[in-house]
Length: 286
Image (cartoon, rainbow, N blue to C red):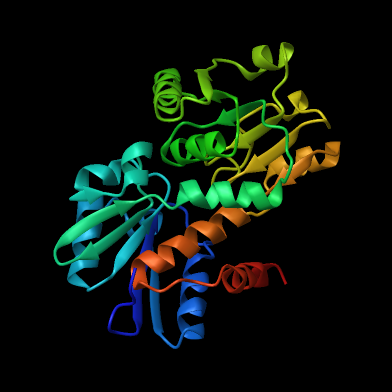
C-alpha cells in the first residue's frame, strides 16, 4: 500500500458508550509523529441520539473523512451499507474499519489480526487445546477466527443467543477446518467436564457502561488463562477476579493497539509504529 499524496488523517470511531476510547489519541499521536495532521473524532451514538448508521456514514463522506472505525454494536450491521469487503471482513462477517474512497465504502476487519497478535505476544505458550469464547457478536466472530489461527483445536462458544452461537460455530468450522467449534448453552455444564484451558470474553460485559461478567467467575480456576477484549476499563471485573485466583490474564489493550495499527495504515497508506501507538495507549494509565 502506497502513502496518499496528502499528509493528513481524517477519520473517526462510531459506536455506543465510547467516551473513554483511547483510539483517537493513538491515531492522532501517530499522525503527528509521521509529520501529518490528525483529525480523529468520536461519534458516540449514546450521546448523539438514535441516528441511523447509514446517516453516520453519509455524514462522514460529506465531511471528507478517510474512513471510520466501527465498534459495538455496529460491526455486523455496517456490512449491509458497504460496497465491497476485504477477504478478512468477508470471511468473518463483520467489519470494524470502513475506508471511504471515491464514493465507495470498503469494509475491513482489523480485529482478527489485532487479537491474534495480542494473544501471541501477551500469552505465549498458552495451552490451546480447548477454549471457551464468550460472545458471538461482531467482535466475537473476529476473535473466534483469530483463536483458530492461534492454534485452538476446540472452540466452545457461549452466547445469550444460542442460534447466533451455533451459526458462528458452523462458520468457524467451515472457514478454519483445523478447529472444531461447537455452541454450548451453559458454562457450568461445560466446566463440569474436561475444563477448557482458557476463557475469552468477547461480549461488551465489563465495559464502563455494562459492568459485570458474562460468566460466573467462581467457575474459573488458577490453572486457566483468561482474556478480555474490553479495555475501558482495562482491568475488567472478569480479569480482576481471574488475576486474584492466580490466572494468567490478557487485557483488551493489546487488541486495541494492534487493530489500530492496521487501521491507521488503511486510512493513510502509511505503516504505523506499534510500539509508538502502544506508548500512547499506555500513557492513559500514568
